[in-house]
Each structure stands twice: as structure tokens, then as C-alpha cells.
Image (cartoon, rainbow over all chains, first blue to last red; front, top):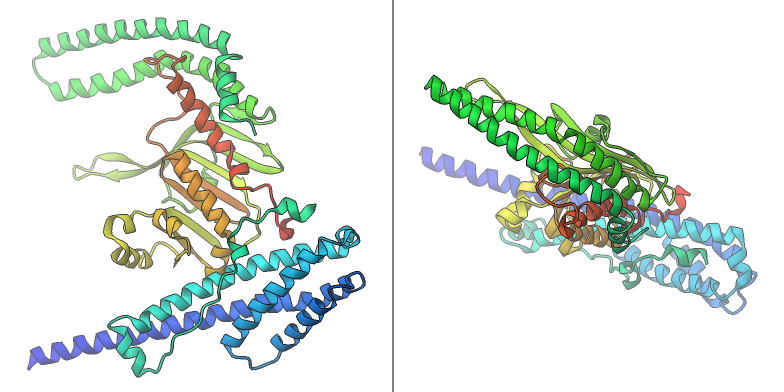
Amino acid sequence: MSVTLIVLIVITLILVLMYNSLIAKKNQVENIFASVDTVLKKRYDLIPNLVASVSKYMEHEKSLLEEVTKLRAEATKPNLSDAHKIALDAKITSTLGSIMVAVEAYPELKANENVMHLQHTLHEVEEQISAARRAYNQAVTDYNNAIEMVPTNFMASLMNYRKKQVFEIVDSERKNVDVKELFN
Amino acid sequence: MKSVSFLTDFYYKTLFPALEKLESDRKSLKHRIIFIAITYTAIFAIIAYTLGNFYEFIIFAYIALGGILYKFLVHDYTNEFKISVIKPLIHAIDYTLLYSSKTHVSEYFFEHSQLFDKPDKLSGNDYVKGNIDGINIQFSDIHAEKKNQNSKGRDTWSTIFQGLFIIADFNKHFNGETIVLPDTAQKGFGDVIGHWIQSNNMARDELVKMDDPAFEKEFVVYSTNQIEARYILSHSLMKKLLDFKHKSKQSVYISFIGTHIFMAISYDKDLFEPSVFRSLLDYQVAMEYVKTLHLAISIVEELKLNQKLWSKR
């Protein structure tokens, strides 16, 4: 009798611990995504400013500027799914990258203080986004591991937890940032 | 920043007259110490022989008095060495650096770094302070000890940390606290158990798993903020810290608190001290002084602390 009781208690305890650890992992992902969202918004706020300052000079890159404006409008819509936000972020990152490269070809822009300031702020925000993204990826990896690994996977499938998507780290971020280049 | 080979040249060429004089001082000091040691030992042996008892006490007195006597004998030589070798060497790296052979990094900074437990006794010497490329840096030799009581109720001292302690301005702005320690748990117990031990470390903040496997293997990171920890420890900084660790070949402790980066590099001896029994012209002896100094001062350049981000400009 008492043995069955002890076994039952131990099993319940294990189940509770498993359940709680899964919840904690899911919440960690959500928490960090909220921070990711905040820094992404910071960058969205910079985009109109940037477009306004460079559009006068950049005749040949009109399509790039239009694209980034369009992407921003889409990204700031309410009720987007996390996966959609992640996809949009990747597109915005690459488009902004192309614009920054294009800026290099315009000496007037490089000399413009406003553009310089924007470029630095953008760079700073990119660093923050990169950090937030890496934190998010780690949280998602922990979460995904838990829902795929024995024994938590049984509990996870009962709770109807699905695998989550990670941000893909852009290759250029792995490279050393050369600040000198930013000043030249 | 001057290279190690420049400093080695400086040591052997510019400092040569001073070294020659010190070297002859050292030789006569060595002979004097050997002579005194023999006499001293003989006196104690005679005392022990005549008393025929209290051996424990005699051995204790022999060691304690011997230590004091030795320190007294080498005192002048040590001073002379620091003024005519270590100081010019530091000024050769950067002539604006201040050097004091007697003081050390303040206890406030040592505790503020949160790298180690609060010490009961903090000693040290060879304090260097200055500004390199707009970055404030200071470091010194540090020996932090903790008082314990053994089973007999006698006080014993155990070392918390001994080595080089460096403080410098950090080039990013942050609010939380991030601490990077050598990874002993994962090395000793493997990945799974090691991780479990680390994540349950009550004395520390949240465990941060880093996405650089080589870095993660050498270090463990604790922080008050998961995102900020990664903001500070960018991929490039992780790589640089790893390179720094490999270059120093010692255990390295790092923390990011307030506006500073704190680094503690563990050595199991007092640094920048002359050895009476080894020649000053010995290449290995010279390289040790040069390399350790270079290592400490080079962090500004190695970690690119002088490249400030927008928020800090």
C-alpha cells in the first residue's frame, strides 16, 4: 500500500516537474520574442527617416527604397504571426544592407551628417537586434529540444506544443564589424 | 601599441647598463643569502640539539623567521629592480602610464567585479594606471585571501585569487551585469551534468548559453539579462576573448559591470618580482616580465575597446 503511494507521488512529482519545465521554456521564448519585437520596432522607426534623407540623391535605387518602405508597412501591421515577423525581418535586413552599400557610391550622402548619424544609429540597433535574435534562437533551441527529446516529448505532444522557427543568422553578422569602414 | 619584440629589444639594449649593475648586485646578494642561510640553519640545528625537545616549535620558528629574514635581505634589491627595470619597461609601452610598486587596485573594484567572494585580506603591488587610445585602464598584481578556521580553532588563510587584475572602460553601454567564468563544471562532469550544475548555481544570475561552441567549452556565462549578455558578447568579442585566453595560457575571469570590463588572470605567484637565483639576462625571465605587461596593456587593442559604438560616442 505505502509502496504504491510512494510510487504514485514520485510519478506525479516527475510529471509536474516536466510540465513546469515545458511551460517555463515556452514562456522564455515568448518573453524574449517580446524583446526582439521591441528592438525590431526601433529599426522600423528609423526607416522612414532614412528613406527621406537619401531619396533625394538615390535616383537609381528608387526600387530598393520603395521595397523597404513596403516591407516596413507590412511589418508594422498588427496581429502578425511570429513566423511571419521572422521572415519579414530577414527581408528588411537584406534590403537595408543593400541600401547601405548603395550609400557608399554617393559622396554627398557620405558627407551628410544626418545620414551619418542614421547610419550609426542603425548600426547600433542592428547590434541590439543581433543580440536579441541570438537570445531568441537559444530559447527556441531549448524549447525545441525539450519537445523532441525523451521523456518531455510525450508531455509536449499531449500539451500540443509545436516546434518553433529560429531566426537565420545572416552571414555578414558573423563577420567582424570594421568600424573604420563606417567612418570612411 | 609596441610589440613584444620591440620590448624585448628595449629590455636587452636600453636597459642593459641597469641590468648589468643589478646583475652584479644579484650575484653578491645570492652569495650573501647562501652564507646567511647556512649560518642560520646551523644555529637552529645547534639550538635543537642542545634542547633535545620542542622540535615542532623550532621548525615553526625556523620557517617563520627565515621568511622574514629573506624578505629583509631582498628588499633593497627588489626595489632597485622595480625602479630600474619594471618602471622603464612600462614607460616604454606608453610614457603616460603611471606606475607604483607598492599599491594595488582598490578593494572596491575587486569586490565590485563580482568575480570572487569577498576577501578577508587583499594585498598586491605593481599598480599601473593610465589612458590608452582614450580608454582608461588600470591593473595590478593582486592576492585575495579568505580566513578559515581549522578543526583546532586556529586561523588559516586560503587563496581566493592570485594574479593580474585589470579594469578598463568598456565600449558598449549596458545596464545589467554579465559574468564570464572558466568552465570547470562542463569540463569535469561532461556537457549534460555540467550544464545542469551551472544552471542551478544559486550564487550566480541566470545561465546564458552562448552560440559559439569553442567559447562555450572554455567559459560559462551568467547574466541578469539574456539579451544584454549577447549584446556585450558579440561573435567577434567571444573570439577575441578566446584568443586572449589562449595567449595568456591561464585561467581568465571576466565581468561586465557598470561601464567597465574587469579581467582577472590567474597566476600562482607574485608577478613582476625579481628572482635572486635566476639571472636577469636569462631570456625566459625577461620574456616573462615583458609578456605579462604586454598582455595586460594590450587588452585595449586586442578587444578593440577603443572602437566605440554610437551610444558611447
